Image (cartoon, rainbow, N blue to C red; front, side, top):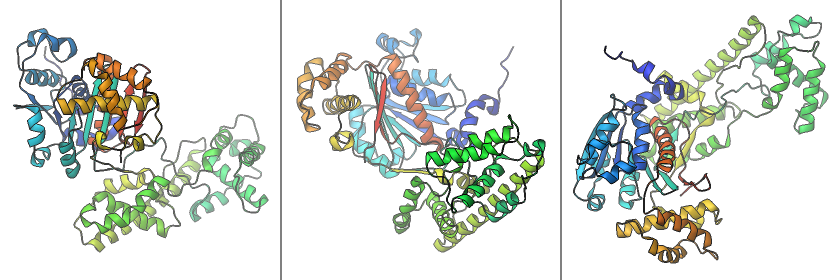
Length: 511
């Protein structure tokens, strides 16, 4: 009896709920390169093969599978001994998802290859994964703006860094996208609310009034009694809730419960958030450098023009939460929000067209792209980065001068990596004092006791990757890789360490 074929909609149902068809399409068209693979990077790769990346390449020197490989690598079997290591790993990983294409590239010497590889080679990939910070490679990938993940584990410790020149995210998936404008109603909404007279209502009729209407009417009463001011302090907001409560005609009216429970949210200003203001502030530089104008910045420019012409407000999303009310009143309210949202969308399109016309560009946007951008306009993400290796940074500046326990792990890993890149071998336990002396190049510590302990743990591992640590870091790395490929959710920005002995992570930004 043959296997029943599964279509992609069924196969990827769960992840489609996370990043939708647009994200899945990017994933299925992506090409990922894993250079000098480790157990950790293979764990990461597994987490890309399962959701269906398009293609992956493993690049390494040619070698055969040994018994030692079987002890640490989940993707090798007893009958693989003697076979080509990379070819076997690729074959076994491929069994996890037959939709994914793969290949192996063998090089004679990895150390020579890192020096000789050209930008033309990197340009074939959408994401590159490597175990150490090879400076020349990082610089070339940075110039091409190809995202890179540097990831590795040493014993109970893990390290990861995301390197991109610039990274733009529209679909950040915040917890809430609601924008109800209760504090700043537009004329049609104000007219609708004013047209509902709550005085003299029966209990049944009052119980069907949408909670937004109750909130707005209560706010009108409050402003009338307080010289036009809205509740600001915690005490005033509690008094405002009591005002709503006083209008309740019967215990158990769900719409009044909703009005009170959501009262805190109505006082959150819905104008431009600081993260979007920061992006707006970068517009002059972006439009001064013509080669830096990506589609993202064209949309941002149009958004800024819209905001400037609309009293600082972004386009309305037009979405309403579920609420206890009559069907007629809910639909009436919903139509008002949708009508305003469509009107704002058309205004945004006009601003976008003016931007495109002024630049005489042939760039086009689909209706879906425009709607997606407008929907997420207050939650955009933009980050700039550096290709400078951690070894060449001001370590004190990276950790803001505070040597936390996790920062000690970061420094210890930096010392280990520095030794590996210089000597092409993992340091022996006898190198502990040498590494401690070298630590003063990065950070002056009066007491190196903690650093010595962490270095000791790393050195005694002899570079062995432990299954629990590699699985965790591979999971974290897989999530970050998917964010970079799909351009959804906010990625790591940009360095993380995991301390498996204390079971904590900490992150920093290298600029």
